[in-house]
Image 1 (cartoon, one colour):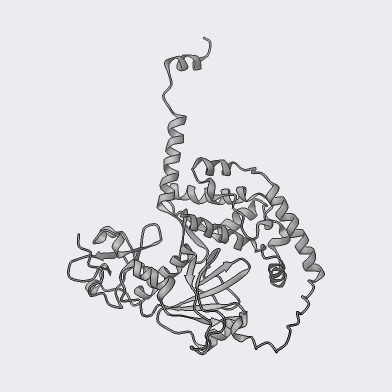
Image 2 (image 1 turned 90 degrees about the vertical axis):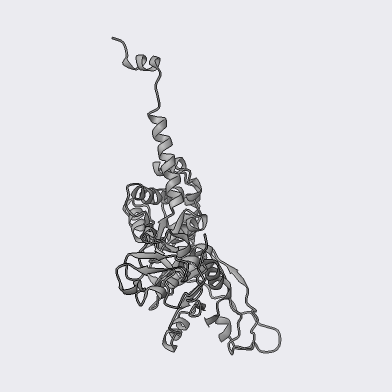
Length: 397
């Protein structure tokens, strides 16, 4: 069948809808008409997949004049798609360091892979679209769809001291191919540094460089370091104590638990246990027909209610947590540990990052795998019995 996906699409064309699982689907991936089963990512209106021969394929709003998209639909959809794509791929092309647009300062720009991504996580007074982490380094990413960043917001970003990149998507609204969109977002779209510490450094004086002595950590930070190192050793040495881990293994998802993540020392149990308990609760909700969504704050509450958190590390003041993060790159608060684990499951294809902050959705393929495992266990438990077995089960008469 002919796919007319690049015809007369306009900047107002809506190319992504929100599917029943809560994730975005491209117009090329759905059935035509109302059978697409999608809603607008911006206003929630039921969508119609318009896949005729004359116009470029796009979504229309059901029941509205000319089925036109709402004003914010295309922008919201593209913005959300970019964030979800980046969180699942964990890679992108970084721009060169050229503060005046011409002179290159050391770094020529290159592909960059990172370990985890957090969507819309508050940093100070701002909420970046995505924060990506590689080792102990964070990078903020902002997607520009319509409006450029003003000087006030750039100043706020600079005050945080964390590197930040802007990716300009304003020219992509006419592009309807999913592959072209993905390549543009990850590699080809214009991008620039909003802030990079290297751009603010003054040239070093001539002559041999003198190394400054590293500041000695405060006594309280040193004590926290030792306590956290001991907690990490304990977590590594622990075996599983919950039935949830056995359930996850039986579901064929053993690779999803026991994952070492930053902040592991914040937990009083093995990662096999806390990760399994959280994942089982999400899967059970999905199997019962409710939204199969992993919410970071709900997962944290589950773990806290079981007294599985070290109070010493889960209640640190902001300055203490920042000092410990600087001194120990493997430290992170419990909420960030949960997010890092969820992002690893996204990379494995078990979950899908949602556009909402600290939320991940169970993939349909994952849920189908679990359903099949449940059916096999049920069939095994209620299998046919032989006549001899039936007689012996009655006991003596």
